Image (cartoon, rainbow, N blue to C red; front, side, top):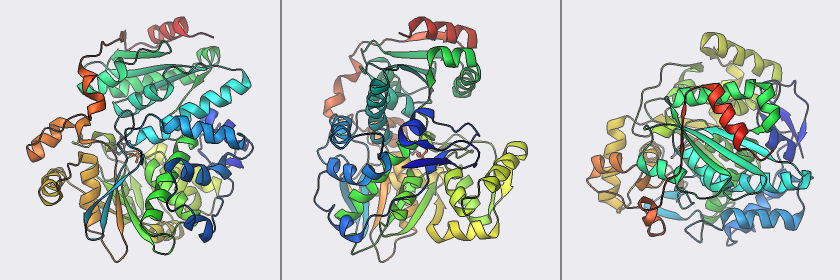
Length: 462
Ligand SMILES: *Cc1c(COP(=O)(O)O)cnc(C)c1O
């Protein structure tokens, strides 16, 4: 399978190359040149299989040419081995026709583990074959960094440096980054805020001497390997509820549009998904875009669902590429407008295409808190604030077909907001209860490119 850029200018790549590259050289994102379609019989045959087996059958065509059959099966096995639930992505029922897909049983209690664990193993396998090592540097406000650390800890072919804003992440998030003991893991507490960390990461990618010297690689949410791993749970959930004989809808709490874009790919592969509902918090750029046809950025207002506090939704470019009939020139043009003026208008043809697949809603802060309380009362289920945004918006879109809302994090990751909403302090799962006793290990660094690159060069094994 070949991968092409959404801006039409970069060379097409294999799965392995697209994964190791991340961002295309023309500034675009890689997408499959053609999305493989699964027959209704092949989809029906997924019912009752293990999560790993579903993962193999759904992802196999996308990695064609990069990994052998048994090699790929082994990669999947290792990726999901550390999950705290045998089903990996179990469902619970919230109402007569409303289901919650729990994506928080991975090592860091958020759905990002599904993708990050998979690409940790994919990177390791690909790099070993090439006899190469890379240095992964990431900037995080909390969830992504811990997921990356857990995924790459102890692997031979990668050194991982995660920058987080010193004193500005929650204690659970910090401890998830500072307590792994593996020598290839480096937690860097930067004296600055999250924007500073992101800006230094960008500087590092623009410092070609450093970039080539340490073989810098990125694993942020635009990495195609991450999107692909998320396609799987749409299949496992839908087939558990009767697909392909019965169609289902999904509601997805959205920030960077990565998770819901995976649902869009599942639909293109032939999974009968009726509606894909975009759920936003008060930072509702995607909801406004679908309503008005104009993508127009405003400042970010911090919310109790911080992983969705975003105004530039990077993966949205991928769906725009399809909506514009895969015209890379048209995508380049609107992305240039966004860069220069902070907004662009979507053509009538393209917005019509988007509205055929997606619908949307937003939840205010008060509605999010009220939903946490209401769900506890009605069902006994304790939701994290991101999942509560999804449940609130889903309830406005219930129809004849089953609605599946994605629960993106465990409530214990956001204890303050959950306790304020419903009075209950969510406990960490038993397997993590010693998190607060484990010794921490991190390095404080100034918000300074030179200091950061010197430190990273000194610690990589290149
Ligand atoms: C990252 C994240 C989201 C948003 O996911 P996108 O793929 O960026 O849309 C939602 N909830 C939680 C808990 C997250 O960590």
